[in-house]
Image (cartoon, rainbow, N blue to C red):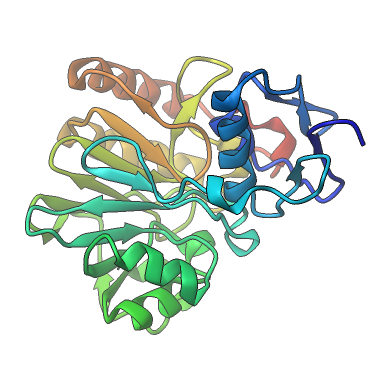
Length: 289
């Protein structure tokens, strides 16, 4: 094998392409290496893809990535870090650490479970809360919450996926769950999907909407909306006007930072587009990452 490659375990979760979009592309339903790295900066981008990929399918020719180049947790800005080490048990979802003013942290969704990773994250500060956006990302929530001694949050609509949760969000009205942090129930992708808004700056959208590199806009993953696309349209119509943020930080799909005014306009437009959508069969290949 000559240089970097993608092995056969790839299930096309898009995580590697988010981290190295100029080096890794998509072909025939999986990621592929577009070209070899030209310098140390590009080599580091590929290592970020390695240590985020849930199947470790991004490989150097030696088959052994340099553990010293594991960049996670990776700062996105001063307030949020990307956990990396995505899990097959959450379909490769991204997870985040949110810094709070007191020096503590909240974890939004979870990376794969390991005690070593949990200890690494805890070195940044005490993790007080684990916030689950919905059932698909609940696999490791209890283990992380137990390890940190943290509160575990989920919506009642998806409570059966995390029955040990000690903080249950009910109904569809916003709920303040910490200083500057509000949970906005957003049923649609699942019955218990939740969006977490922090400091009028960060929007942790779960699988309700994401930034698409294909369309260069906010999109809903309507081809993988398990519960109800009509309910998601209703949720967005109820919620969009209450949200103000600069960062969209989804579980699947890309992240993006824009001005709060531009994000508000794009979210309003997304709400209108979603209102016109109708149910369709589940099709993972139809998502426009």
